[in-house]
Length: 269
Image 1 (cartoon, rainbow, N blue to C red):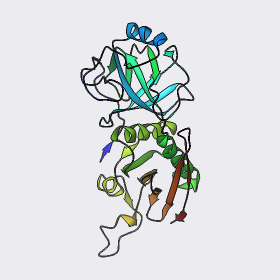
Image 2: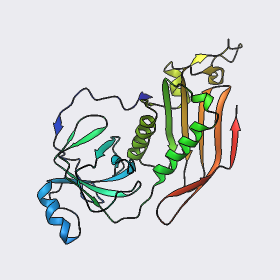
Image 3: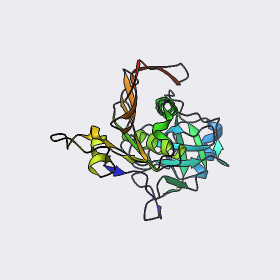
Image 4: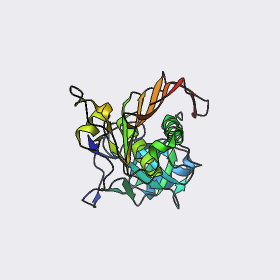
């Protein structure tokens, strides 16, 4: 278990040997752009030596994009402000885009140095990260007393089977940023073992090791598990006697790549 999204100690410019990828594939950085309309490709070559492909997780509405690496293996989160950049059309959450830049700042979240252009890849849009952000916000609003005036926000997306590590990291950051908190990642048991929880009552003999008898003072853990392709579960937990669950949820993707969902059952404790 670890705290996520803490600022990096080192801030420096690192040329992306091993970070830049050609569209849709992982590998060494390329100075050649992917296939693109003739009226934009020459401009993109001149404007930036590197490009890489990212999934837009959030921020299309504001222009402050939260991005996940398209290869799915990186735990890094990337943020890009599109103001002043060359765009070949509006950017939407859930799509894959190529970003052209010179280098990346080694910070958290990572930011681009001399970003010059954003290009659509033309691949199918899939905004399931937007689906999960909506589920989390809906869960935040219901029985809101469990998460009012939070000082600490826990997240556990380890049970999601349809998101890459990159997408989970970006989803974590976007959710925490929306509420002004730096998320703490880990399962309920891991957060308990790290000392974030305190006993609610004096445990009875034989129940000293039961996490159900504990509570998170000033904190709440949000958990997602399952898959939008099957069924998934969302839960927020403040104590053994304070939790809310969306269970047996099902979702459907529309033709435009957006998602809607239905809660199968709700439970409270």
